[in-house]
Image (tube, rainbow over all chains, first blue to last red; front, side, top):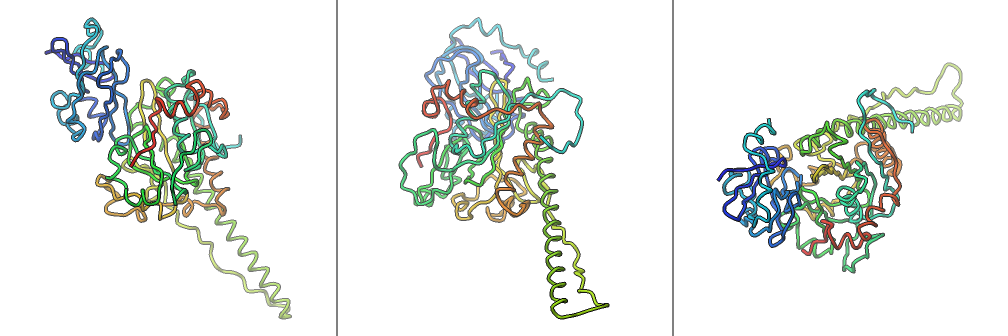
Length: 121
Length: 338
């Protein structure tokens, strides 16, 4: 499925009613070696741009923002023991959360691959 | 205020509110709570520069928990990730035996030990006020080192060298006077002068401040620990500088498995440096006041500074229900149950 992107450097892949969310290659390279991913919002319904978790690299904690509204249904538990997977495979095994999409029309407001590529130039 | 000016700047300066917490009685935990509130809940969305020293153990606003402790002189503070794995950075048995309090802060990094001599500095930057600072750790640390702390420590070094010169001159004067008196007592007369003190003035070699692999160092030794939190539209960068510390308190920290290259295998005693032993001016209180004065001068040069009183800053916390409600609620600073 085609990826959509946010200005906060998250990617979204939609599979039916579920959206899978992670951070982009650009984001992981900017952050540096990721040492911790904290997501404690499983089961919560959050609006777009609300914080769903945080990520730590180089003594810096950065908030992670919901690209679209929905219920956080699953957290990638592998990241608890292996946060570095976000660096090595940000679009694959480095996915962070799955959400049940509240409003699919919000996807139209996200960036296409071309628009995101322009953003990070 | 009367600060030495190093440069003239024609570009507009960021507007920053300056909060001096020296003598406020605020504890380290309360400071962390206030910082997070100012970052995330200031309705005026101000940028901030905050300085001070803090009581490690006893709170002024929060209730004081009952602890069976034999060591109340320090507090252990752990970063977000580290706080989830305290046994990887702490000698848990020793910490528990001594009943030392440990808390998890809202920013990153490892574990530090603070006491009432620790010098705290915090900068909260709104992206709109700081367009020249990318909200990433590297950029923030480079900015703080270049625009603030290089100047602070250059001034600290100049003060310390000047203090050494004055001290030496006074010492020489005393020696000359003593010799003159001695000569008079011995009835040594014409043609003879008291032996001149030919000792040359010894200027102490003082290593310089630098940012090295994300650490603030003096020479080859770490002098302060810094960490960051980046939120939507803003960032926070805080540092605790080691003025002085008890070696026994540092022994609560183990050698971390992940450490900067320049550290090598050095234990805490060989890796850390006390500012007191490097840039002291004779008495601790004067020296610490000088440090914060130089931070304020650097801030005055870099920012359009507005001084804010604690009671006004605390309105942000009051709007969250007060310090206790904030600490027990959304505040990310939490006491660790080891």
